[in-house]
Length: 335
Image 1 (tube, rainbow, N blue to C red):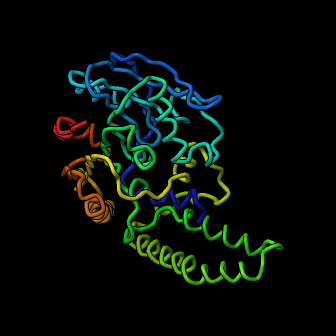
Image 2: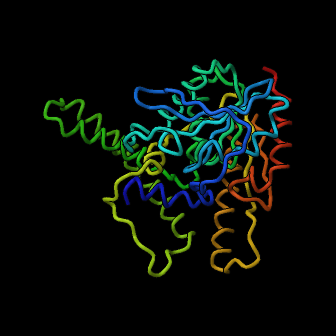
Image 3: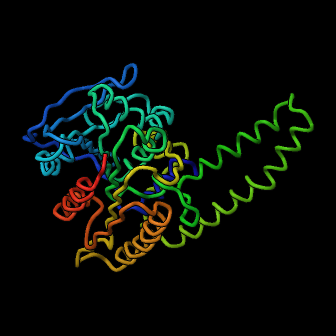
């Protein structure tokens, strides 16, 4: 299983990724501008206006800032509200889908570049789904530039990594393993350094890889097998922007700014849902519940909210509850 397929498979843990929306008439009262974040890369930025503390919305995978066209208007009375369409999607520029162009750190830098261009000071960042990786990227490197984070069903392993959950992104450990093996393959390495590298491989890297593989295998036992006749992707399948975003996630630890983490579970299951799919959703909810518990333990000052009978697009399926939680969180910020 290569990195792309490991990521694609693992996304099942957090429900369906936000898909590309069908074209509709845009009647939302926002201004649209395009801001350069890197040579040759401009991002679509929406400005719904408003006064007060800045609030910036970031969409899920495959989505755009327009996903918040309705929801953002709930906050303009008390906040200046923006939205950013990440590179590779919507009207934003689409650089080559190499991991280096879409890594979590690079996407976090895009958010910081937009903040700098607009002179937005100490905003709250609110991200849906995979945007949790951008939130954690910014907060881990520049906590002084933001007032807080709001994870909208987004505080999963790409935003906060804790042992005990399936390590969705094995490439992080594999990359470290490759680096050590490459050192051993260098003809110029000294015997003393070679012994150090081998000891480290035997002591840490290989046992960690084995533990990761066992955990992944355990997770695979809990998910439904592919449908009969479903296409099986090739390991040589090239990355697209979505695949590059998934392959570029990193591991982040405790968040050191005020946090509101909203989780969408137990998932709303339509009455007509087939028994097999229903069981799969329940199994995913159990894993997500464990994820939320570990996030709360690892971030004891965070406010963790679980919204029942909801969907992954929780700000759309349960807008009243999410609005209430966001307002309470932002009203309580001290800076």
